[in-house]
Amino acid sequence: MDNMRALRQTRLFEAMPEAELAKLAALAKATRFHQGEEICREGASGSDMFVLVLGSVRATKGESDQDVATIGSGSYFGEMSMASAEHKRAATIRALEDSEVLVLSGEAINALAEQDAPFGYAFYRALARGLAQRMRAAANDVALLKSLARKN
Image (cartoon, rainbow, N blue to C red; front, side):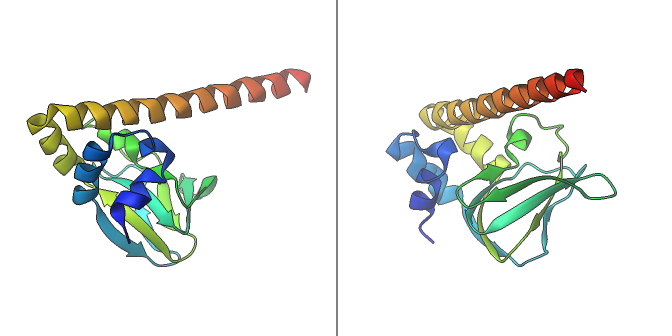
């Protein structure tokens, strides 16, 4: 798996400068998860984020494993752990099929960002854009649900 190409094909990192993306790619650890295998558990601590290179995963919440989302190739998850050291995983993520994932260590990224300001700026700017996109989507979903609830 070419880490550089996989990261570039992820919307989160598509605009990241080449030199900074190369540094991130060097930190990425290619990992395979088998169908049904848990990648992370809701409520657990963790600072890693994940880029789904190939395959699909399901996000569930609660003891009943209520489906929240299905995530496919080229997407990412776990990024909220990068924003706060106290963060707990918001959902349980399991592979729906055999999947290839790049694991990005929050500790390694933060250590590099402290030593390399251009990298830190590029990474956290990409992360902020990604979080903003997800917040806009969530706000739109809430507005739609409220609109539907008023009609009923």
